[in-house]
Amino acid sequence: AQSVTQLDSHVSVSEGTPVLLRCNYSSSYSPSLFWYVQHPNKGLQLLLKYTSAATLVKGINGFEAEFKKSETSFHLTKPSAHMSDAAEYFCVVRASGGSYIPTFGRGTSLIVHP
Amino acid sequence: DSGVTQTPKHLITATGQRVTLRCSPRSGDLSVYWYQQSLDQGLQFLIQYYNGEERAKGNILERFSAQQFPDLHSELNLSSLELGDSALYFCASSVVAASPDTQYFGPGTRLTVL
Image (cartoon, rainbow over all chains, first blue to last red; front, side, top):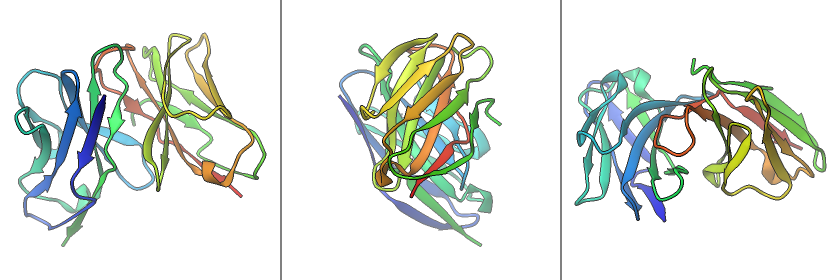
């Protein structure tokens, strides 16, 4: 069994300040973890993924995430928010053990103030 | 642009009707996934096909069915529609079936049932 919890439904930041979107997971198998972004009325775009290589993963648009097995977390960060980062962000877990069916978190809405 | 196309973009229909949503995967991708996104349920995995065969089933209702054709495009059929079926339906594709490879999402079809 696997599950994902995104700890905040909304995160509000000012432009130029750091971003932290929190994600905790549970999985019976070694997980692969993903962050996707969804802009309004658009499909989901992959930001980054962790698949048991380096625990610090760098993605597109300056985002990165760190896999912490002891904390079962995969938080998404960015040093400086841009107005264009305003969107919905989804944390996703896929685990081995027969299939890689993904489980999505409920999403975190990132609001960026000028 | 992810390379995954979905038609139609919008669909408005009445309760009790049947609709078909179409998805063309990225060139070279053999696996197709269908998802439903609604406000109350979030993003839910429905079904996966790989090279024409059903690979995995998620939270798909019996009124819903899907298939993948020899040219690898896929169709999701929704019948006896209810108001609660109103949602965004996404298709995603990936190269293989059972690995944590990246899924590429289409722009979605917004279904409104009146």
